[in-house]
Image 1 (cartoon, one colour):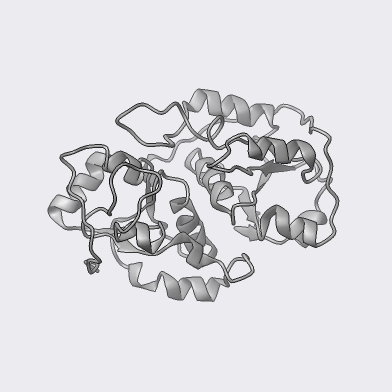
Image 2 (tube, one colour):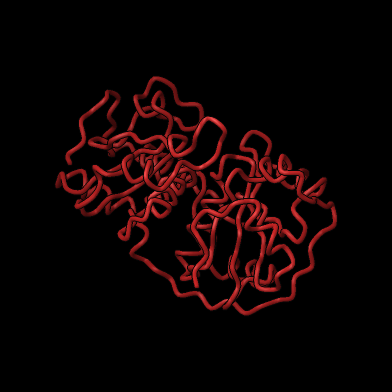
Length: 285
């Protein structure tokens, strides 16, 4: 039986010692890449294994190209096996970035055909606020064999997105903050703006004011305008926060989930020939 897409601290606490549960700590700070591991070494949920956004969940950056490309899958599978992730194991991902990095691992595991994966509602902050146990002791998980079953239909390439723009088909959704989408500011990439025709559904809109996930009913309403369109493609700055929108739609009960443009804006804007929009443009749906 598959776990819920989003699980509560109580759900995890009741299964903390279960041999078929692997907890993945995904804390990371883009401004201080070593901060996540330091935080893990200071205190983490008992049994958690650390996954680094740039060392484990991304590959080397090659310019021009995306800031967080997918890692070489053989190396990533090795990391999964060393963490004790394999057949019959449920993975619970958490971070302290409102689920942004945890969602990336959630998406990557599903991309490799491992569906038993979920995200902890509220992350490490909620766990601490609930008074649940933490430890500084590194986890030692028994190694398991992981057999990847790649689902290429979950991702699209820059060439796919170029065709969508040229043919004016499908729906592109930009998950970045509205001011970045509009091209008013761009703190990370060399060019400001968005892919022409894209609509803006910021990933933080999936959470309430306390940083907890909105209800499936609220999220179903938020993404209702995307129903019946093909393809629907999510993107963001570098293929990380867009995963939160994919996760939100799964939590809302959508059977057909959007695809992810992994290269996202950081790849798109690195190619001078790619068109850029800087004003709010209506969607095509």
